[in-house]
Image (cartoon, rainbow, N blue to C red; front, top):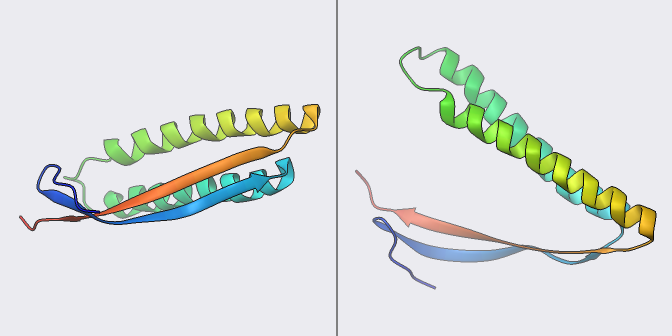
Length: 101
């Protein structure tokens, strides 16, 4: 699938998650993914400390957003566990090639 968007085009859409999960399975998949992304941005912040002129705001903002997402996910998982429900999870990743600058 190709789509122009701000000098980029979608080169791949990959279905990352697709299925029904128990609350324990959902917690393992989703919270691991969110924890990895938080770790990634924390490492980015550490690397940016070595470059004083570069803004750290984007990584700080993403960490805050991911922490909020973690709380929302945790609440849904607890609600599902308490009601004996499972969770259907679907996630696609769009990978874009961005023209060089």
